[in-house]
Amino acid sequence: MDISTALAIGFSLVSGVGLLLALRNQRLKAKKMRAKFREMEGEEQRMFAFLHDLGLVIGKQPTDGVLSRMIVDGVLEVVGARGGAIYFIAGEAGFLNPAYVSKDCPPLVGVSIEVQKKAERDARVLESHLRLARTGVDEGIIGHSLKSGEAIHVEDVKNHPACRGANYTYDVSAMVSPLNYAGKDIGVLAVARRHEDGFFSANDFAVFRSVAEQSSFAIGNARVHRDANEKKAIEGELRNAREVQRVLLPQEDPVVAGFRVNGTNLPARIISGDYYDYIDLLDGKLGVVIADVSGKGVSAGLLMAMCRSLLRAVSLTNASPSVVLGAVNRYLFPDIREDMFISMIYGILDPVSGSLTFTRAGHDPALIYRKLDGEVQVSRPKGLALGIDSGAVFERVAQDEVVTLESGDCVLFFTDGVKEAINAQEEEFGMERLAVAFRESAGMGAEAVVKRVQGAVKDFTGDGPQMDDVTIVAIEKR
Image 1 (cartoon, helix red, strand yellow):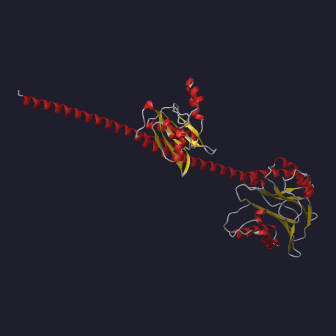
Image 2 (image 1 turned 30 degrees about the horizontal axis):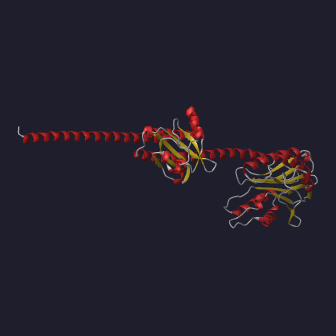
Image 3 (image 1 turned 135 degrees about the vertical axis):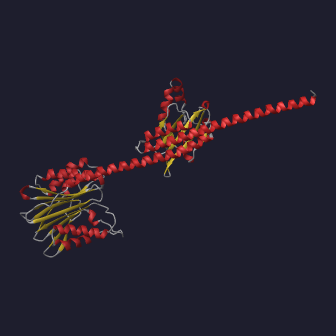
């Protein structure tokens, strides 16, 4: 064999070996690509499974704690992280509290030297610290992600600018994302790996961001539903309380020889701070009361119920109205908040003498219609509201006023929700309009007065909201 032939054969062999090596490399690359695609496909399937489970849990209205655990454990499964955590913005401004930190989670926040030393002797110290330690909204990579409003991929946490001076000494990589719902920051989701476990890929980060977005929606949606259900439950309880309160109001007009008495209570909210009552006294006399507790809602309703019980108990002595209210004030004063008080008119109607004796405890004046001349008088006897003074001043100021009623005369008690009702032009109904409505209806009896005044206020305010409780009581001498 000549040299040229040998060289040709040699080149052929080398080319064949090179081709084989090239084919082998291509096969290895293809194998790696298939493995990578399978890994990505598996990661995608795990994400879909996680999102499916997340949707099922939301339907069960989970607490933040239950949802946090599921999200963290789920995202660890999806991206294959060593550990993770969710931090929520605390009620105290400026801090993030750990809602859930998974077992064996690498530190995501700075750890003091003291804790690090204790952790060298007992690993549970570090785990306990991470589950309890809050972090500032502008501290470390957790705060940095929240402040920037973007998810971050940090390959080496200890060398990140946000961790300088934070006593962070661990070889950890992390992915961190803020949690935001309806334009409002609610917390931070983070997962981590130790360097010995490898680093997160770009695909891991893309998947993590998607999971964080869905987690934000899940947490926010769950909170909205939970708040709505809690509100619904509270409203149900308030309606039940309103029914109880309704029972405390007179169920029918009292029967008093020679008189007609009628009243109504229209609460601005579910629970009313106004009330009126009729109390059967000795010798056929009738106690008539109208009152307005400062404020609105549950606290006013509870104070109203307490006041009603006290008044009913004390009034049975048949003492004068001023004496009765003095006793009620002394019992009530120690248990009433400084920012609350009760205005009231308490009167005793005597069908034998035809007189009405009443005391005004810081309440709106009484209106008296005289049939003889068709005029409306305003009666303002002195008196302090209940709950303002412990007793001595209240009793010194309180005065009884005696009104003798003739046939066709009428007395009107009302709360400030009547005269202070406001229309669309922000004008008050006022005493003048009230006196006109009273004068026009007084000749038709107590029931007609209550309906006319109520209707006049409604006509005046139109479709506007009722701003305060409205209570009206009319007493007519037949």
